[in-house]
Length: 64
Image (cartoon, rainbow, N blue to C red):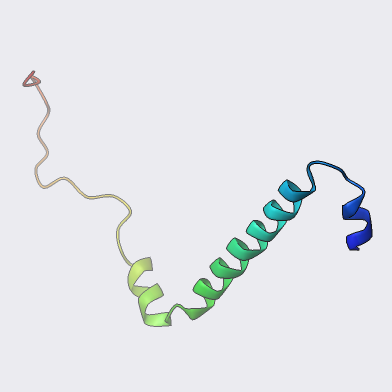
């Protein structure tokens, strides 16, 4: 496998670096995802996506 990488010439370091970086980030994200606790995930899943406004006012003038 390393023999064909040696024949690339010039840009092989970038290819190897990007492949190693991808594998490292992917592995780290998978480890993090599998290490999360189920109660934490249920708590985060129950949070609202957007804040509900406390009062329903129509903005009549902007204070600029």
